[in-house]
Amino acid sequence: MSSFDLTGRRVWVAGHRGMVGSAIARRLAGEECEIITATRNELDLLRQADVQSWMAEKKIEVVFHAAATVGGILANSTRPAEFLYENLMIAANVIEAARQTGVKKLLFLGSSCIYPRLAPQPMREEDLLTGALEPTNEWYAIAKIAGIKLCQAFRRQYGCDFVSVMPTNLYGPGDRYDAQGGHVVAALIMKIHTARMSNSPRVELWGSGTPRREFLFSEDLADACVFVMKHYSGEMFLNVGTGRDMTIMELAESIARIIGWKGTFTFDRSKPDGMPRKVMDVSRLSALGWSARTDFETGMKEAYNWYLANVANRGM
Ligand code: GFB
Image (cartoon, rainbow, N blue to C red; front, side, top):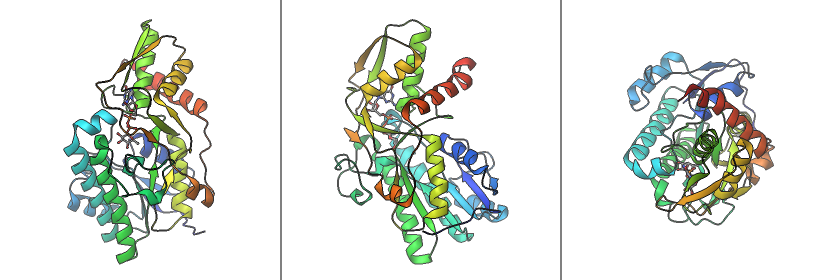
């Protein structure tokens, strides 16, 4: 197994304010490295020349590339241009600037939505580009596939040690609590908490409630990213997940139990279901020695407590 030492390195966490980036920054606190960040005001990742000069000036040696324009199924399907263009440019700018400035190692974060809509489940890394993408998030998927391919091409042609990981659906501290634009876990925490506080007997789910999803706690993903950065160097990207899925209805019922709300779920079938099922084969990463360790109940309680402390009680 390869080993890359982070001690004393100047490490940029691109996207440090997001759920994933902030979890990576917290996880890196124990790695004796210098964590470097930049806000959107300090650095516009859509401008390649700015990215390159900033990275050269900061003497960046290692990059966790967790910066992206993200959102749930509705945001992805109603803002195709932003999701394709911005994520394409952010990936291309950071990966090329890392090459130009001699970054020692870069880890690129993709997503499980890169796989074909009807890929055999659980999805293996080899299933990439073997079928049509899911229409609701093909824009984001193509940008993420481009990022993976850039890392692979730069490794082949220039010898860059750039690796990629493909996380599944995520939840945890620092999630975006936006009822329309957010992902399903954040949206359901908001809706069900609001229903409990207002004694409402009903909560509306989008779609049919039958799609199946896998949910990984964001702190586990951060741990996986540091593990891969330290112990993996190869062209093939790695799935990061729990390998277990559930229906959206089961997810909603679990969140209701944790929040302590009893009521009825209704279904807005005008909203898309998206991929019928998304669960990943995580055997490649587990063979390297990493597996997710936060159980769903524990992780979901932590996510809800973060929401209570940072969103609900601030009237946001
Ligand atoms: O997490 P989510 O927005 O996106 O939705 P994807 C997952 C499922 O939850 C869909 C259902 O079937 C939704 O219809 N759902 C039910 C809801 N109620 C709600 C709700 O109130 N809000 C939301 N958002 N969903 C994402 C991609 O796809 O997968 C991301 O859009 C990323 O870019 C992520 O790739 C991994 O799981 O369908």
